[in-house]
Length: 205
Image 1 (cartoon, rainbow, N blue to C red):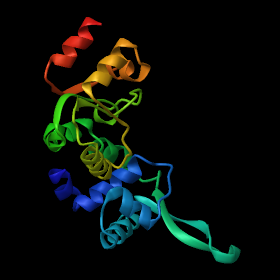
Image 2 (tube, rainbow, N blue to C red):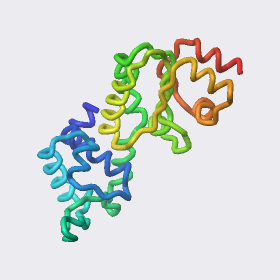
Image 3 (cartoon, rainbow, N blue to C red):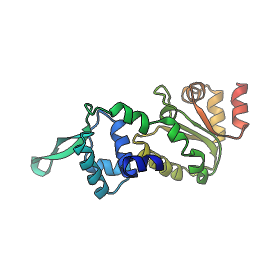
């Protein structure tokens, strides 16, 4: 993220560009960009103006219905699909290897003892995955996991599908051939944390 921030003019711009790149058909108002990217409103307005000036995004207007049926136009922005370097920038900003190199294991070390952590989906460039992150452990701090995931979403520019299970539930789901868990295990993925216990259990099934 740090290298990309220097290249593209700051972390705020990288986050906002990723948001539009990964949601190419969506239209965002300022408040939505601020919330999804976790940048300040001042930074958001400055970066959107810059991206609009270079035709990376285009301005549109959405209609809001106010009190007593009054309607007003509110500015919003969408990725401009005619931007000539869009594919090249997408390949660079949404490079799964860059996301993995940010060391997800370190980010999640404060949530408790994780026994197994698997990433797929956006992290390996697959659109067939059932989830982006699977975390298995005991006495995990789910509220902190949620905060970390929200932070990742703001950097990546996309909502993440994640699953958190304790060891007992994970084994139960494996025994019952739960489709979600089995799909995550069977489809392409990367193991970020693996203490060996659960992997051995899975391999015996």
